[in-house]
Every structure is written in C-alpha cells, then in structure tokens.
Length: 87
Image 1 (cartoon, helix red, strand yellow):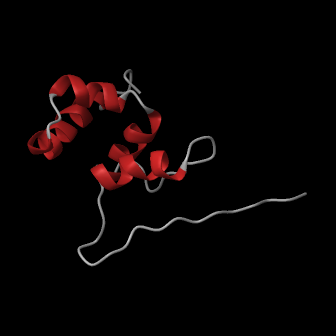
Image 2 (cartoon, helix red, strand yellow):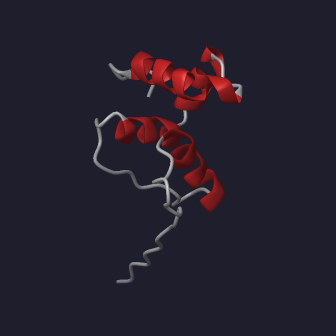
C-alpha cells in the first residue's frame, strides 16, 4: 500500500478523521500499511467500490478498519456475510 499514488493523501485523511481519537500521523501511516485499513480508505475516498476481507483474519480484525474509517449509517447496524463455496 505505501507505494500507491494516493497513500499520503489517505494517511492525511485518516489522521484528520481520527486525530481526536488519539491517532497521530505515524500511527496513521502504520495502520494504512495494513491492506484492510488501506482498502477501507480506498472505499471511503471513492477509489474502490467495495472490499472483501476476513478470509484469513477474525471478524473483529476485519470489521475494525471499516468501522473506524467508513463508519456506519447514522441509524445503521454493522453486519457481516459469510459465503461458503463448495465444488
């Protein structure tokens, strides 16, 4: 993620969005090195339409970046979907 053209803009946006919650610029850079955080910022900024996550991490670790970056609708409830594909 750190070599993406918009990486620094994403870092700045995450910092601005979360600075009152204790995130500094260094922490924003560290978080956005994680593909799940980076993908969440891509969706938030309109550079991606969707993201898929959770295939190799726990639900909590998969949904945390989404809730911290994109958030939920004012009256929304976060939810998850599981798909099992069998041959």
